[in-house]
Image (tube, helix red, strand yellow):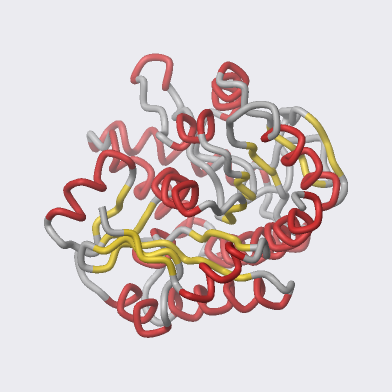
Amino acid sequence: MRLEIKKEVLDALQEGRGVVALESTIISHGMPYPENYEMAKKVEKIIRSEGVVPATIAIIQGVIKVGLEDDELLYLSQAPNVLKVSKRDFGYCVSKKLTGATTVSGTMIVANLAGIKVFATGGIGGVHRDGENTFDISRDLEELASLNVAVVCAGAKSILDLGLTLEYLETKGVEVIGYKTSKLPAFFTKSSEFNVTHRLDSAKEIAALLDAKWKLINGGVVVANPIPEKDSLDEKMINKIIDDALVEATKKGISGKEITPFLLAKVKELTEGKSLEANLALVYNNAKVAAQIAKELESVSK
């Protein structure tokens, strides 16, 4: 399997400097061009402003890239028929020399191969509503159970069953650290009814936890970083939209991998685009916090 690490990223890793991994499905599937390209560039700029190197991960014509050059980022933001790549898709995408965008789980796998310990994303996947009957559970949770990567996110996507997602993570031994919060953020909203495993109030404390854990045992950590309060949407409104959209999806026979994009599109439509603004705000916020954690890991790990 071909794995190409951008020189800037490789130099940082070899010198023990901070690196933050970034997924690419948000670029290829999250929003249209040129908004996706502008978002990707801004996220990288935010990370660099903290003295840390960004590493956007994707597969370009069969080559797994850890860190994209500007022309590759531009290509990915415009390319048609980009494959979403999780663990099950790597062999196909690479052998066929296709272009693929890595999901949360796919990005974690490549970050772990490259030795990157911190990853910033929007929200993790989890157990879908009615998951106890459908067994529709995101691969993200399995990678979190085994890979030494800290995932900075705005909690789990609010279209999921948050309670079952937390139970699954507990079973897998994955702690959910609330960054300056005791409640689990719910992606578009800054809190939910559920408690996190532990609350920590600084990047330094989180870096110390990661270092201590990985000297003892393997496994990922969720760093749940709430969306900024000014960008948070109304929890009751979002839940009603999702409940109504699930009823509509059932009537239309929409299920499996099609359900998530359907629900997110409905949320965007019924919030008149406010959900997209919230999504951007939380992604930028997560990138900043992830970079601060990666920076603290530089000194803790030495």
